[in-house]
Image 1 (cartoon, rainbow, N blue to C red):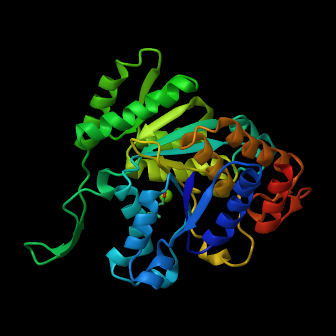
Image 2 (cartoon, protein in one colour):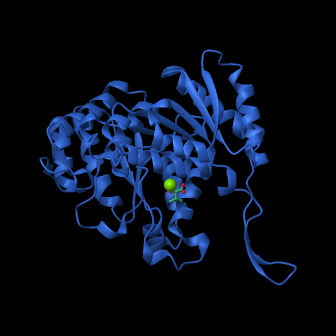
Image 3 (cartoon, rainbow, N blue to C red):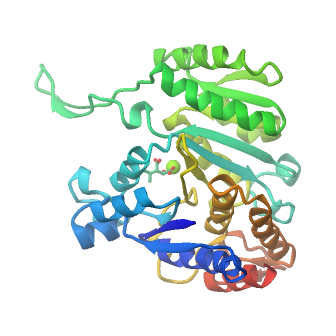
Length: 354
Ligand code: IPM
Ligand code: MG
């Protein structure tokens, strides 16, 4: 297994280091894994003048899977847009064709009090958000800023989905629903936006091939509200790129902290990019304070989705559960009565629990 490791910016290197320690436990037991490091985002801009340089592209194309930390930082905000770290992330997603982004929002029972919502609202929560990742207003052309006919400056983007793009993400979502609770909610804004009215039409059509799955539809504003009101009504959610971006951040807080949310981004083959759903957290970077669990659980997703190693993935997830059950917490999920750990200490505990 060739794994490209892109630590990235901010807390990226700290959290990736802990995930690698956990994977190396399995490697030392005989699982053949090779790790190849390459830069992405601001780190890559500093070294190569591009947020997704050819050097990194080559390594990612040759790898079987990619493990990513996070990208971005305030020192890069003034760069020309194409050079900014976030563009590196968008470029790698597009380049590797990673159209299916899986973001599980699972609440560990031990963290029911860490959520800002009442424990009874979130206890037992287990949602899978399937976000389309290479289309929508994120990539639609034309886009830009210009001076219009009246001499006024304006900004514009294009929300667009082709039929094949909607079909393939719908198939992924129905496939996942089949393996879970057989309930799929497609989120749109079909009352206003043609792009998503079209989305809904195609999802319904694909649904005919999955008669066992109970398909429902919800407007995105209502979905945002329902996620807070009664999140346990959801099993699998499928939605476009921009709505998925927003709803997955929202869903992460149901689980107590965005530091707990792993993610997998998959293409048509089994190649995937695995990264925590959170960002680079420049405010705590380099302080050994970050929560590495989302990255560690992203590594578990990598074993499951790219390599079919269900048992190994489960072992990592169980180790995380055990550590939480033992009362260990990083600062973001700390509550009185638990033991507060640094990022690397949390890594120590997961390694020990393995
Ligand atoms: C995410 C992030 C990215 C996105 C940013 C960093 C470009 O918010 O992965 O959710 O908008 O997709
Ligand atoms: Mg986001």
